[in-house]
Amino acid sequence: MKKEVRVEEAIGMRLAHDLTRIVPGEFKGRAFTKGHVITEADIPGLLNIGKEHIYVLELEEGELHENDAALRMAGVLAGEHMTYDEPHEGKVVLKSSVQGLLKIDKERLLRINMIDEIAVVAKENNTVLEPGDKIAGLRAIPLTIAEEKVADVEKISRESNVFTVKPFRKLRVGIVTTGSEVLKGRIEDKFGPVVRAKLAHFGSEVIEQKIVGDLMEDIQNAVLDFQAQGADMVICTGGMSVDPDDRTPGAIRRVADEVVSYGIPMLPGSMMMLAYREGMPIFGLPGCVIFDPFTSFDVLLPRVLAGEKVTRIEIAELGHGGLI
Ligand SMILES: Nc1nc2c(c(=O)[nH]1)N[C@H]1C(S)=C(S)[C@@H](COP(=O)(O)OP(=O)(O)OC[C@H]3O[C@@H](n4cnc5c(N)ncnc54)[C@H](O)[C@@H]3O)O[C@H]1N2
Ligand code: MOO
Image (tube, rainbow, N blue to C red; front, side):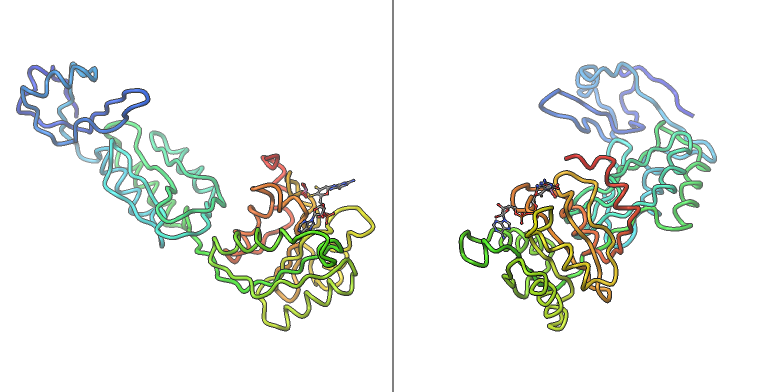
């Protein structure tokens, strides 16, 4: 049960919830904390944030305060590699404690948000998380909520994880750089540094970069040599489009036992290829990767490093929102 009291008459009473102050461009946050005992000196401050009344709360059987509802939800939604702090203004934020890929069971998240007065607000599926990054904000909408609604969240969350953080594998990677202009020293290689930096960000290392020309056999042999050397992944660069000297997709096809896709419905990065040979991922990277800071490679690399086998349909789905 909640009762309204005029602030002037509330001296000595406890606040039933955090009170928020917002000054555009300057501040948004907690001005008064739940449980604070109101003093005469607080009254101008309360009136300045528009509070002429406060709630005095007596929880009934089967009712939860917004903070406790958020904490209960955090208790079941936080899994491995996740942390959360105390509630602020009725909300608990789940965070990642590691660098990793966020996986969301979208169907369960939808079921949770279909529960009236519950809001579980998450980042998108497949987001790359750095340590400390937010995963989701959890809250009950009203100040008090029926405990059974929170119990429904708990039930859905216990069936199977709604949120999972997959840390990245540390792979040993071989780079095969195609292009007669690079082999013959007409231009300086720009793929090596870009690919090395992207891999280093996720903790993977380049064991070697082999500079080959545009001969199909040389590209094939370089991939095979890397696998024999124990590489966990091979990345071929350049020669991915439609010129007669663009032999990389053909060479990858010859050594691969599975081509997931040549062509990714994303721009930039549409000419990319993802294939596998005996479980070893092989990427074919188009020229745009040395030019554009974010391409389809930045979407698929974390997926592969997280140990996922990306399917053709997941690649097709990238067309929705794939124009960067
Ligand atoms: N008519 C069409 N033109 C293009 C298509 C297409 O489908 N039809 N696709 C476009 C897309 S998308 C991309 S991306 C580019 C690049 O495709 P490639 O992977 O075939 O790139 P290359 O032809 O090998 O090289 C393009 C450009 O980049 C330079 N390059 C390549 N490798 C290196 C390296 N290791 N270091 C420095 N520079 C490198 C190369 O010298 C060329 O200047 O094609 C579009 N066009
Ligand atoms: O592969 Mo290009 O990659 O779309 O700019």
